[in-house]
Amino acid sequence: MIDEAIQLDSLAHLVAQHAIRDVVVGRVRGDNAQWTLSIRLGGPTARLVPVRSRRKPLRTWASFTAVGRFAESLGIRGFRVEL
Image 1 (spheres, rainbow, N blue to C red):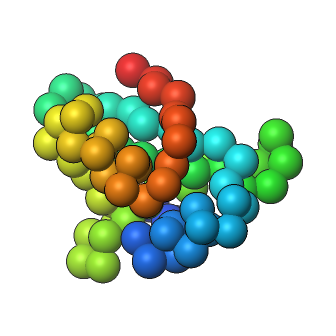
Image 2 (cartoon, rainbow, N blue to C red; image 1 turned 45 degrees about the vertical axis):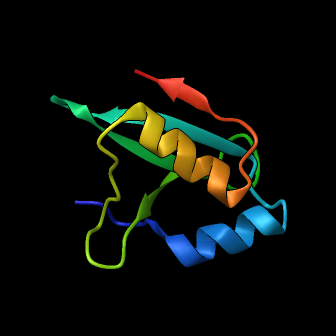
Protein backbone atom coordinates (compact mmCIF):
# COMPACT_ATOMS: atom_id res chain seq x y z
CA MET A 1 0.00 0.00 0.00
CA ILE A 2 1.20 3.49 -0.79
CA ASP A 3 1.35 5.69 2.31
CA GLU A 4 2.02 8.96 0.55
CA ALA A 5 1.20 10.06 -2.99
CA ILE A 6 0.49 13.30 -4.81
CA GLN A 7 -2.74 14.02 -6.68
CA LEU A 8 -2.75 15.25 -10.27
CA ASP A 9 -4.00 18.78 -9.49
CA SER A 10 -1.26 19.28 -6.89
CA LEU A 11 1.32 17.98 -9.34
CA ALA A 12 0.26 20.52 -11.96
CA HIS A 13 0.62 23.33 -9.41
CA LEU A 14 4.09 22.16 -8.35
CA VAL A 15 5.26 21.95 -11.97
CA ALA A 16 3.99 25.49 -12.63
CA GLN A 17 5.92 26.74 -9.58
CA HIS A 18 9.13 24.90 -10.63
CA ALA A 19 9.12 23.16 -7.23
CA ILE A 20 9.96 19.66 -8.44
CA ARG A 21 13.53 18.51 -8.07
CA ASP A 22 13.36 15.20 -9.97
CA VAL A 23 10.85 13.21 -12.04
CA VAL A 24 11.13 9.44 -12.49
CA VAL A 25 9.11 7.17 -14.76
CA GLY A 26 9.16 3.46 -13.94
CA ARG A 27 7.43 0.18 -14.58
CA VAL A 28 5.06 -1.43 -12.13
CA ARG A 29 6.76 -4.49 -10.64
CA GLY A 30 5.65 -7.70 -12.27
CA ASP A 31 3.67 -5.90 -14.97
CA ASN A 32 5.66 -4.70 -17.97
CA ALA A 33 2.58 -3.05 -19.48
CA GLN A 34 2.02 -0.43 -16.75
CA TRP A 35 4.08 2.71 -16.08
CA THR A 36 4.15 5.15 -13.14
CA LEU A 37 5.40 8.69 -12.60
CA SER A 38 7.00 9.84 -9.33
CA ILE A 39 8.43 13.16 -8.19
CA ARG A 40 11.04 14.26 -5.68
CA LEU A 41 10.64 17.50 -3.73
CA GLY A 42 13.34 19.05 -1.59
CA GLY A 43 16.91 17.90 -1.17
CA PRO A 44 18.75 14.93 -2.64
CA THR A 45 17.79 12.71 0.30
CA ALA A 46 14.06 13.36 -0.17
CA ARG A 47 12.20 10.27 -1.29
CA LEU A 48 10.20 9.81 -4.46
CA VAL A 49 6.45 10.38 -4.16
CA PRO A 50 4.25 8.60 -6.73
CA VAL A 51 1.41 10.31 -8.57
CA ARG A 52 -2.07 9.08 -7.72
CA SER A 53 -5.45 9.50 -9.35
CA ARG A 54 -8.57 10.61 -7.50
CA ARG A 55 -9.85 7.04 -7.17
CA LYS A 56 -6.70 4.92 -7.07
CA PRO A 57 -3.65 5.16 -4.80
CA LEU A 58 -1.30 4.80 -7.80
CA ARG A 59 -1.84 6.38 -11.22
CA THR A 60 -0.63 4.12 -14.02
CA TRP A 61 -0.34 4.51 -17.78
CA ALA A 62 -0.62 1.69 -20.31
CA SER A 63 2.44 2.74 -22.32
CA PHE A 64 5.65 4.68 -22.01
CA THR A 65 4.41 7.00 -24.76
CA ALA A 66 1.26 7.78 -22.78
CA VAL A 67 3.13 8.74 -19.61
CA GLY A 68 5.49 10.85 -21.75
CA ARG A 69 2.56 12.73 -23.30
CA PHE A 70 1.06 13.27 -19.86
CA ALA A 71 4.34 14.70 -18.52
CA GLU A 72 4.67 16.96 -21.55
CA SER A 73 1.09 18.22 -21.14
CA LEU A 74 1.95 19.35 -17.59
CA GLY A 75 5.10 21.15 -18.72
CA ILE A 76 7.59 18.60 -17.41
CA ARG A 77 10.65 19.08 -19.59
CA GLY A 78 12.47 15.87 -18.75
CA PHE A 79 12.52 12.78 -16.56
CA ARG A 80 14.61 9.75 -15.74
CA VAL A 81 13.49 6.24 -16.60
CA GLU A 82 14.02 3.35 -14.20
CA LEU A 83 13.32 -0.12 -15.54
